[in-house]
Amino acid sequence: MTTAPKQSQLKTILAGFIGNVAEWYDFAVYGYFAAVIGPLFFPSDNPALSLVAAFGAFAAGFIVRPMGAIVFGYIGDKLGRAKALFLSMAAMAVPTIAIGLLPTYEAIGIAAPILLVLLRMVQGLSVGGEYTSSIVFLVEQAPKNQRAFIGSWSKVGATTGVLCGSAVGAIFTYFLDDAQIASWGWRIPFLLGFVVALAGILFRRALAAEPKKESLQNPVKMAIAKHWRLVLKLTAMKITLGVGFYGIFVYAVTYIREIDGFSATRAFELNLAAMLALVTLLPLASILSDKIGRRPLLLAGSGLLAFGGIPLFSLIHSTSPLIVLMGELGFATGIALFSAGATATVVELVPSETRCTIVAIVHNTAMALFGGTTPLIAAWLLTSTGNPIAPGYWIAGASLISFVAILATIPETRGRSLA
Image 1: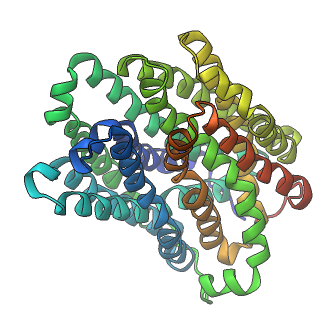
Image 2: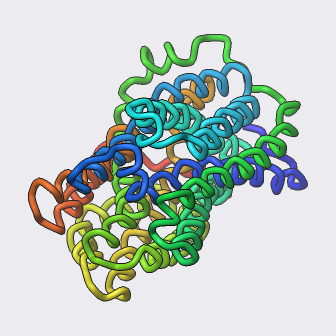
């Protein structure tokens, strides 16, 4: 695989980075304001049921991600990686501003939650192609000994987007009271997201003229017919990323507020600190992956979440901000180690002619089944069992599946040819 000239590597990294910032800011803001959105669009006498319904709409955006994976994976393999990156960015902008302007249940009745779920699904289609197309784009353009590091900037961009969403949430909860946020304040982060998305669209237009990578056959049919075993292995490997990331960096914000009893501002502050740690650790762990290999980091990351998930979540269930942060930092470390090994592995294991399609299907299937549903499952477990540590059992059990799958089926791929 030909790598990009050194003078264009910064442009390559920025192309993968900026779109993920915009996409994941937009996608994550909903999760952070779920406690506000729930009563506005899913009113109920029981606040817990409103929250579960709001997280159900959050999950709906993930359920359609495999469809987005097929659409944008096909575009990436048939028309070129750059084309897929541009179109996925454009598909995020419209639903983002629409959610920010959407009337509530009080104004238009049942149409409000229906429209909200539909807009979340459009966002899910877009995200289904964005993250994985950028991973393939970055890793393919990287020198052989820097694939994990350069590929990591896709995850850094996604995490930065979520971090920006958390920062905006912290700022708004600091300056506005609960009534102002419920009345109009929750809308502004979505409208700001449209501005960021528009900047990403303009930047990625410059990529449209870059060389296209074409496949003469239907990559979707090839992925299913020839590589279904590989798809299953990689999907099982990715489970720990879905439950870990969305359990800690999305659901935990609500958990710290509703269960631990912290203020919204403090919950966002703790989340910001943990995400800053993740953004810092990702490139460092990826450099290590380029030096010692993918498997050691995959096993270390999934193992930390599998065997440390319950005790770490026990730390999050605390009245001490420092102890809560220690739990979040433990999860952040596991996610960083796993991501550092996984980013390059999924690209290095998949044949070039179906790479965008398979990587997209794998990632989005794992995120749809185990990532986007994690806040919903965690909220349900907590409500049905009354055990405040129940979400930790879900994270640990799901991560154990990944640990075993990696141990049994995933080979070392560092240094493999991408041709």
